[in-house]
Length: 469
Image (cartoon, rainbow, N blue to C red; front, side):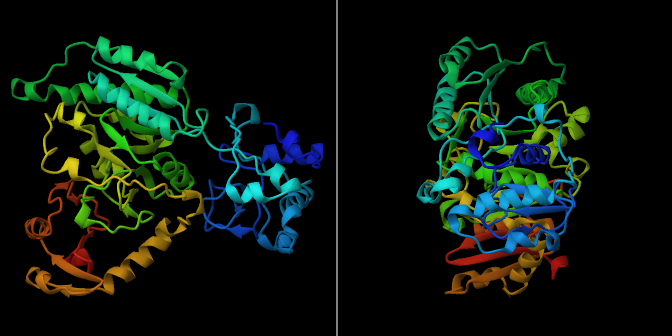
């Protein structure tokens, strides 16, 4: 970690203290007022945030309370703010080092070489300090026998990737398909690794399930590869994609921004790029809008090593995604999903184990975001459970209760509630609204606390279970 080159004025003692406080998402200090996060971050008593929102890093970890760090609130000249704060912090911590991470030699650091616009306008020490470190988020691409799909998908990932060290691409192959393997090799150094699932033995299934054998092979492929990624290559987190996915221009920035939230909020266990109800006339056009959901969406998702090691021993023989949705695995945890999907299904999705089921009718019509959102400027702290639950319930409760027959005369109502008491009633409402009507482990698609939201004209509809009244 070349802190010395970027921070020439900090003494050796300060460097040692910074590295001892470092972890994989540690960045050099930027300008702000020392905002304290709610609760404990990674079981650290106090975490101080530099920048103006939840996800901007670095985070300075300390045993001290905010009152002990009064110098953080001193108004400083912009050019010297970061350097002065660093000097103050290292002085305050000189006799109170709290080691919170693995030994520094075990931590993977990657320097960000590009500077954001605001940083480029700065001068002196601030400009030098704005070289900071970010966690490595590998992209794991699952592929089988669709060479053209793989080429299109990986080409798209390479085109939006800003740093190959931060986002290494790892292709995982099954099926022993020569054409697909050749395509993977053609990416050369643009791909960090190619994994080949070694077990191609015949899978024993009943005669009645022979037509579903593909789902068994997929589950076997995922088991081998995810375990290899997390426990052989030793990544702490991974973005998981499939070769038939199209990606939005902000796909990687979206996951990078939400990674600290996933690590911090223990009521979360995944981040997904997909909205199951993301049809053009069913979504809010706001590209930065995000939600919590109790339904695992998949189709471009981020998962952690700790979550994987928790579930891997009971990995299913088939239908792994539905298995993840079961309460025994989910344990009341949620995922983050976007209002506007950051992935779409390419035409190559018509060829696969599902034989293109629902592709023409539904999947190809899911809207994929085409705007480059500046995620590092977005405050995502509202997605923390304690904050989101209060806001979400207040929002839902503020909406007028209507019936299906009222949908023809909503006019300019901003929001409304449709109430269901049984799963059968939900299906009728969903069919009327034109959204997905199925349940997995008794959880409707996209729902949070049983509530599904979508747009109907200009009105946001909350399909709400009666027990939430």
